[in-house]
Length: 463
Image (cartoon, rainbow, N blue to C red; front, top):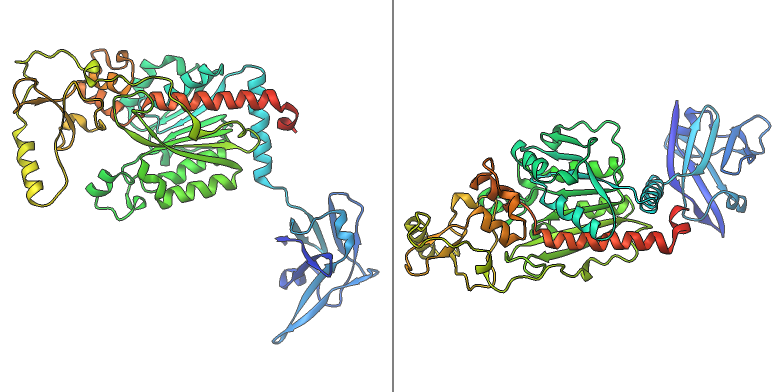
């Protein structure tokens, strides 16, 4: 049998010390009074060998009726192999005890990431992107465009999305993101068998927000985000993909409310243990050129060794926001059927006021400088979804079209063209998507930082 002990090198009277005790020693032949010797022939490990001619003796101490074996080595000779406070791996098997420095898995992973990224960047090879909860590919398109601005090629090698309609939209609208080797996985991330997953360079994830958002928690009567029966545990699978694919950088987006959840605390702790440097920022759509006042949490985790030069807080907009909402609105005839009274929403607003609730209709005009968030359920006509006021009739409003939605968000209208793109589908894929201008700017700065890291310290990066 074999016993493995992970422990740290201590100190006693200015000498390093390694202490072992218990039945695991006895079981492998190191009982009290057994003699042993030190085999110091290797530079990477120290071995204790039980032997009749050994110059050291296993001691013991009484524990009730049992005398427990103890091996206590406190000698400056240990400095040949180990440092004070260093973690060591001790393998006890068949009258031999091998003590070696624990190979730090995270350190190996960090070195692998840096080597891969450095090699690809130096050779102008496309970076491999893994996309989780891919949706309609709006975030991935922004990442691709931002990296391209920095002179970096990229391709999505794996895309995971459970909604086939959303995946079809991305494949059709964003052919430049993919290659012949791209793997499209349609299904729940919980059902995906990872197997021997190749390594990625960047992993991007739009973690579902139904448990963390204010609306989601209210609708589902959740005390906390993790209580959501479907979305509450999805962060676990995201972290498992990070662990297995070992990307050089991780880009995560979500609702701002996620920042103070137990989910986010777990994500931070795990990624830091993997050797990532984490930066977070709440990005505003209007700051980054959109007419939509959408705020999202943006987290960028960069592997140690490549993080210098990137400052998420300093990312500046690429695009300028239009001054008026009207530039994104269509010329709709004043007698068109889309103008409605929405009397049921007016009645609901009155009931909410009477009940002391804060829900109010949101009515906008072409002269407004921005519009509130357009959600994936906009087509359903919720009580707080933004509406456009009729120019002449104060009782009538209308919904915005999918084409207006695209222009408001900063998406090319070609994304929502075509007979297969309905109003419902268009609002769904864009409503759950990001403000592309914000994440394009983030990706551009990330790419520039990668390039600078390779140019400034190539030897340090590949060491």
